[in-house]
Length: 302
Image: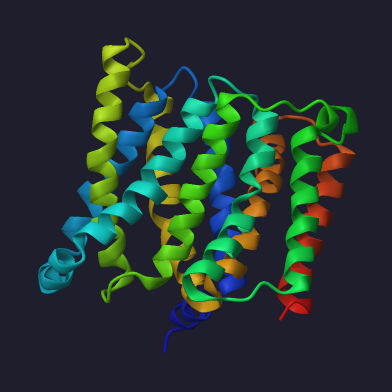
């Protein structure tokens, strides 16, 4: 067996490596969103990325898709709901929430996803929530709070909920639901499932793009915008989703959901490297808290 194949097989079976890769790409997506300002409009980026996926994946998997058409037809509604909630609804609600709430609130509320995942896994699969798992989630949430507030306790004390906060909470519920439900996806290869779900995500994003055009907020991507789009198609839209689904298969939704809190840690680190933003002590504290929380939930909470 070729050494490269052996390494890839080991990586594909390592849930922790896959979740680190997933959250690193998601953190990179946050930085890409900042690069996108002035280069490609928000819903154009959302719709075009799924159009790109639908231009690539169905062509590569045309034989597998044809072979699994009976399963696709039998479970099309379930697949559609997963694609809409996990691929479209979360990002759309987050975009809308940003119009009436702050980035600090969004960052903190996004850390609630693991809580909703643990609750959803308990409701759907009766997976118990251990005391150490709950402690681990609490510690990681503290790390998220430190990151979002930049280590300023007064910022946390002055938080106020506005309509955008409620939309962000709803977005987190949607993504947690996707995380829990994808574990029971229909019996078909991962790539086939992802491709079909992405097709539904693409369809539901087109009306949102039409709204952006009607409101006069659409503009064609610049050369930098096309580069950003290419990254979002390959990274956040394909690689991270596949690694995320594989990690859920290996360790379950509850344990995989804890790693989501790495996103608000990776994002500022990448911002320092790529955007030149200053790195503060609170970043180091937040990273220690998040990694410590994952260790508690993963090792001590077993």
